[in-house]
Length: 385
Image (cartoon, rainbow, N blue to C red; front, side, top):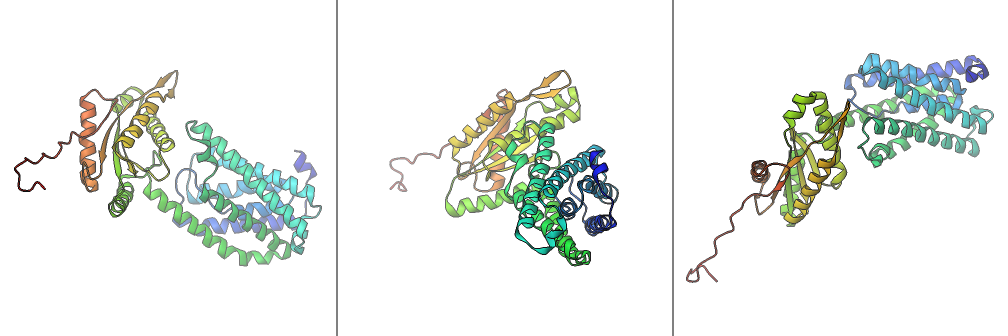
């Protein structure tokens, strides 16, 4: 209410707002046929939200994301409404805060077009504030939705930081261009559209490689990466181990609590696997309640230690359901390259046999294949050196 009362209506502001929202709408329409990956996805619409926050009164920054989020919902992909509402609120609050700070430091925001140092510096600082607030709000929501997720996963990764820097630079450049002449938006629009399409294409490619429920690699993508690691291990002579992990009595969970709870268990197990494995370990969902892990550089002792640690951690994990907690255990089979097999098929077969052995012995345990040692040569054997 205070913002609306303090906002002075000017046709220049309305025209600028309409032009920036129009550019955002063109970006959305130009990328519409590509679609948008499910879950949390990134775009470059901040290139249009940020100039609204810098050049126009803070009230406009609150409404800017609403316009484009409605267009995304109607024209690109309809998702659950509360996600759109929360995204609009997070972006609006971040933009409004950045706008208030910038307007408090710079009396006339349109001086950005003059190219003087202090206003541009303040604009960069406001853009950084916008990004930090937006990231923090989204991270809090993601953590509340899945408390087992590490803060590092929901806050930062290298690709996200690079994308945030690109958005910041685009937003400041577009703001300067708007100050010079609104017609310059026509020149800024094509490169932003191209970047937007490239970003969505990369995200859709990544989505095609991952399992929709767990976010891990799907079976086909995991097999491709595993084959690459095996070829590398053969060339370098490094050790390599493979784990097959199965959730014990998973059907009972689905029967007792329903498939939605079963999906939560799968997500919880996948999150635990990611948090306990190295960045270069190759982990995927093999189907149903089975997971596969490739451990480059691990010998049989290290692989068994990793599998045992996963078994203990997952055994201590609890999924809250109504007034109870759902707990599960896992069984794991371990196979080592050059001992239990020389290619992926052999390793999978050996690990699968070890997994069945773990189940036969009572589940909730880690087993390795029962490999017979090679026969020792007889003393009179002419082949003996």
